[in-house]
Length: 338
Image (cartoon, rainbow, N blue to C red):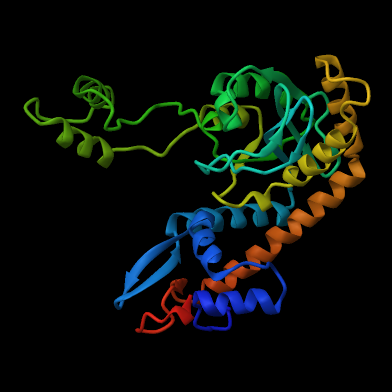
């Protein structure tokens, strides 16, 4: 619609979705969904509008450009997709995916038994050999990200991922907090004044001793350095490059589709021999083996098709004015525009 320079309202967007039979959704549900996938409301010309967040647009463009550059490079790196997920001892019939960068996603329904955290990585040739990690958690149900931390993730990278990568790779991951432990923390409002002063002194930044904390924080922000992540630094030291997924774009991570197949197998077969820890681990291993190298090749091809489509779309959008979805189709407030 943007490439055709058509005026986009909730009404016209829903009509387009209906005509192309993309999804059956009400206008009200569409209004609620759009902010959850990277759009925000904006007031313009007395009309309430919804526009995609500029930060998301920029991060997506960077991802698409770098992925495309790797694909066209004479020194193309193997792309490795990694991610965490969870399974329940007695299965999880009503599955639901989550993006590590999105807070407040709903809990999946239908879970039973002890919960297990799963971490793995793979590429077009299959899973990275010996990189599987699965462990049980006794924590309360909720966002599984709370059961993973930066130390555990870095330990997995050092002991299971890097030793099993045979060549320099491009590693795709999301921005979950445990993927994003900083080499050097930057001052934030929760810091004490003494901590901010210590940071300024450590970075040889001049300031006045009688300045208030708010002034010192502003000064620190002016001298902020680009974020450097511990895991990214470690991977680069070992010859690999890291490519971070943009928020709200799980479709760019091939392993999401692998998780879906593995969980379907697990949910179908778990319980055939019991629900003990050894049975859970054994069945999950069978579920992973069911995701063959051929399946991985197919999934990566599909994912790269999605990425290519977005890349071509990005090239078109470069020549289109700011993307805004109008909530009110005209200056009136008629319900017909919703």
